[in-house]
Image 1 (cartoon, rainbow, N blue to C red):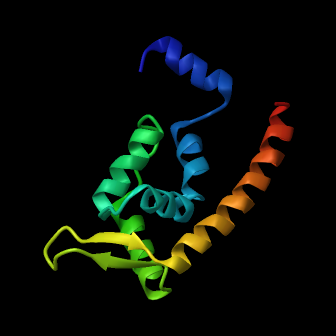
Image 2 (cartoon, rainbow, N blue to C red):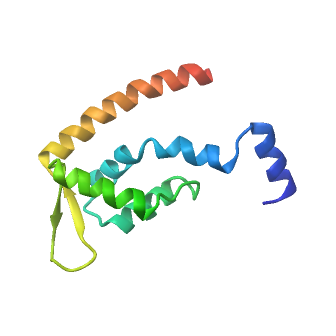
Length: 119
C-alpha cells in the first residue's frame, strides 16, 4: 500500500478490519445470491464474493462451509451432480423464497443506508 493510500485510509477512518466487518454480516445473503446466479460449490462462492468486492473480502472456508451445511439442514439448498468433489449446491424452492424475503429486507435496509449517507 502506498503512503497516499495509507493516508487516505486514515482520513476515511477505515482500517482493513472495518472494511471486512461490513461484509461479514451478509454472508448468508451472499451465499444465497451466489446460488441464485447458478449452481456452485463452496470455493466458487468464495471466489465470487472476492470478485464482487474487488478483493476487499474473501470469506474463509471455515465460515462458508458450516453455513452451507446449515442451509442444507434447513432445506434451503441441496447437493446436485455427482457424488465426487467438489460438491455443487442448488437452491430449493424454499431457498429461493428465503432469498426473496431477505432481499426485500435488504432493500429496506439500503433505503436506510442511503438516508444515512445523504444519497
